[in-house]
Length: 546
Image (cartoon, rainbow, N blue to C red; front, side):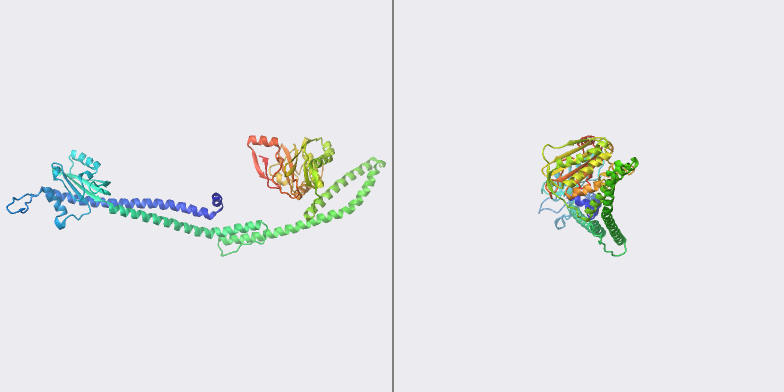
């Protein structure tokens, strides 16, 4: 269902393609933008952190190198005590009392010679120092490189507060065995980048939806007129020749609607002219056929008298009487076909239904064709079921169908055997006539039932006829609610199958006989060269050889 909707909706295809491309472009641009902002923010923070750390190291080194300061006496008579250099250094940075620590970062100063003299601010402890940073600093110190800071960004869990946060750690060794570590929290930067990512996602989604809406609006302006033109063309194809499109503006779509309307008008005119011509032709055929019967009857009576008395004539006159009798019989047959087809055109054909054994109808048709088959050196092979095949049919019309099929098989069978098969199931009965002659070319299965159509116009007729036999046969089959279908392959002959409902008025769902001869179907299936086509009558799947 989804696949069918996708294949049938141009608007859906355009909108989907636009959304896919938009999502890809927005995603790429969003990732690039977030990465650039992230890099800019982190680098800016690293630069500011490096500057602050450098200033602190300079202040600490200056304090450590200065003379010790003696504070006031702790009490009356108490000895004065010198303040530790590290305390002086740290106090010079963070201040004391009300002017104490107000910076965003934390500081840790380690005295490697006297670990007890280390100093830290906040809740930072020596255990919080990243191990990889200390190893890299020690490697530099071993090489004699001091006061060269290193930076590392890591998500630390501080031992004292058990708080985890993304932190930029700047460490350096200075003279006199001191290590200085600055812990700069990146919480604000992380929050800022999270907000930026959310904004980019929201803006990206909004942009994609906006582009989808724009694509929907634009494609609707184009697809809607095309859809209306398609619907109008379908209604025109169904026979509504007065169908027209509304013309708005002067753009390409308006010109398309104008061209469609002109085409529809011309088509309606041509169809009307053809209908009138067809009506005139049918009326002419009907009138001529009826008018010819009166003079034909008179000529027939005179020809019968001459034919009966031909033994008293000279040889040339006797032969002429025989030829005239034969051609009059052919002319009567042609006139009967024309009258029959005119009845179908006028919708005056009716059925005389009776429950009949199809096998008996087949035997009568074969018996009528025996004389013609003998003259062409052809014999019949009958494949009849042992059980009766009763069906409600017009025996006269069905027998005429079978005679036409047998005459056609004799005409094109090239003297080879003709197989006549009968089959039946619960709902239908079928008769198949198979010849092994020239066969049919691909596509001729649908044309063989056209009026006056011949497979090979250059081929001389051996039986004669009007070219209406198969057309009348198809009309007879359709009048019964049945199918008359053809299969053929060049070099393998052809087969015609007549399928009739066993109960008058019942709808056919299948046929008890295969349209393709079993031996051909097996051979073609094995070779993998069977191509399905549509049946000319019922739309049932049939096959022709490639």
